[in-house]
Image (cartoon, rainbow, N blue to C red; front, side):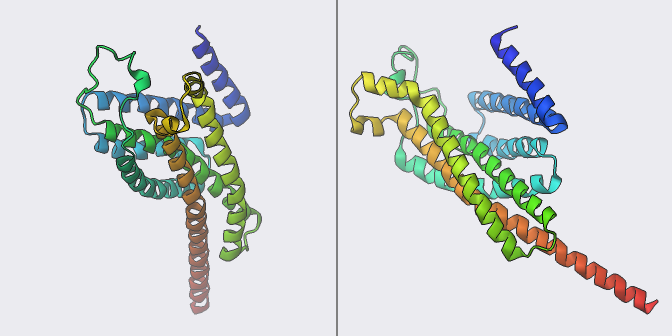
Length: 267
């Protein structure tokens, strides 16, 4: 067995032991998402329309991430709606910024690897950059939405009589913690994956201007900004959707109880 296969098996065992049924579902969610990413890459390489592929696979990935990794349907549904709304807004922002940045395509670091090969494969590098940015922000947005929805729902279960205003305040308090951990995860994840390139810049004596204008650095920095913006928008939107939904269901329940009482009196 290869080291990768051993690590996958160990991950499956640990997720099963710690998470039980939810852990098993989350493990299959990871596998399905990996297969979806491979399928996206294949479809793009075959020349299919990239925006249509993105529109189809973004909801599919959200469904597998959220519904397979969450045991509560209310949390999953609210997280899905919040994630879709945030990603729609972030996608518009990504499209505009990618057009202004003009950072799509291959950087000079890939020159030796691609020497003798065509760098014009007939695929839009701009659309690929937008798709990569959307999929990169998707994970952070879904995680923040699930964290917020789970926290608010637990507060509602612990205090059934809590008002919508109090629930929004509690959601804001939870949001501060979610924002702090999510931002640290995104930033340190970027530095961890980008460390070798930073060493490249240092050993080749890149100036500050050359670093901030390098395509690889610009793309990575923009992806971080998109993810952070997505998390920032997810926190209030997920809180608002869930609190409003709970208040609406509470009002409907009171209305139904009142109708039942009136029917009983008439009898």
